[in-house]
Length: 242
Image (cartoon, rainbow, N blue to C red; front, side):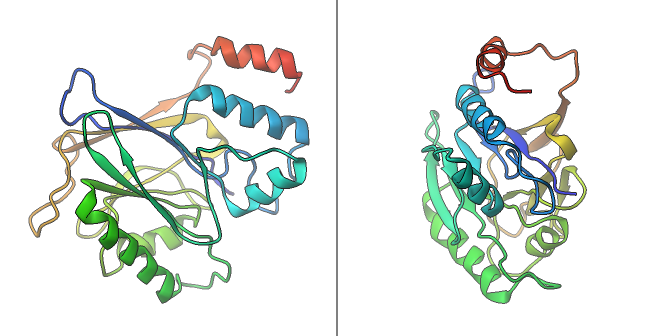
């Protein structure tokens, strides 16, 4: 089953009382893998407008979703990311910290392992971003087993990997050398993950991610106890979607 992904990534580095917040939404928010029927146009249009209201900085749209949205006539937004090729950019935060973001390309011919040339592309992108940023995040729609291979591969790797696609959810697990933290969403989009950084990673032999020392992952379940957003409720009433 494909997993939907929503992340609230909070960088509490310079000012713990008012940390800058980077909001990232992962792939499969609009529709799941090709084996699942595509939602009707009205629902896709509603979801696009709902995400506009939520104020995400980046929304990763998978290859399958891009095709479905284009067919439905839903225009892409400026904050949407996802293409056939690897994408990278620098995101400056209000406290002066610069975050490097990599959107992994789709695996067009997936086999038992990730193609070596794709792993090399990821390492090259990390090396290019590293001198200009304090943190590098990769967003993936590859699925559990391919992402697991990535975080334990050789070469330069992102500090955080926010995954999505087939496989189990993970509140947070580390690579073998503990230099990469890997987070995966849980099914049905009924949770939001918050990641707090108490210190930026040091890219040396001694650094490792350690829970409650330099990082904290918190999963919030979106149960009935969470109040509905009045703007989204108004949108539902206006558009008449379920």
